[in-house]
Image (cartoon, rainbow, N blue to C red):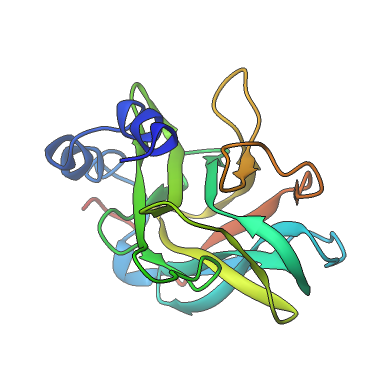
Length: 208
């Protein structure tokens, strides 16, 4: 495991604790059967080297959100991504553990594999810690097309209301993209504006 992913792992809960956290906020409020979710991306214009949260799909109270990196720039040496997704109000939205999928932003060359770690941060359920990295040495890769997906994450609304989703770093740090030498790729940027998720109830109330 790379030092970057080791750091990500130390910041994450065990799977058992994540399952327990999934039940938080289920003591009352809107009937989940009546809830639907809306996702609104930030207004930030898409430009090469930007990383942004966008919707892939939605169904009922859940939305699949992609962290997307924009290109093209085949000269990049992308090897690792490390960032958090910050939920503004965890009483409105929670991260759904176990449904995350690594995307196609990192392309494994001969002898390489792709490793992802996604989990809620230790002691802070509002932070989803994300690490996606190549393993096995060798070179990174660029973005051949207009965009590529770093990771897919699933979020669920718990009640009526609106909250934000933001790309951030660990507390006191910054989100980063590293090259194959472990250096930060300075040209890469993470969307500074927030996306929004909204829970909408079609009527009725009750507990989980």
